[in-house]
Image (cartoon, rainbow, N blue to C red; front, side, top):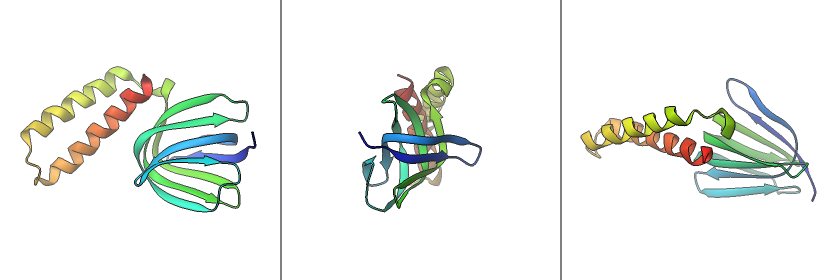
Length: 133
């Protein structure tokens, strides 16, 4: 299968910089799969599980929370707010965050400003738990 150059960065670090066969990400419009020779494309990222298949055919999962996906002249860049590989996720911490967010949501009204913030916190925790396994 053909490969392309993939770079994944967050505000804190360079997560991946190398050749890849495929990346699947959650955009705000749904899941996107990028393969070699993809047309130029840009999309804002949502909260979801990302899957990266490297040039050796190895696939890794990560929790990706927000950011931007860009495909330009065969180069693919992911500028993510957070991008955590499966082995970097603390499952206990994610489950605690999920439980805390669910308790907070039960106390809030949907019209409350804090509801959207807590709902996003819950989605991030659920994505980490799903990514971890």
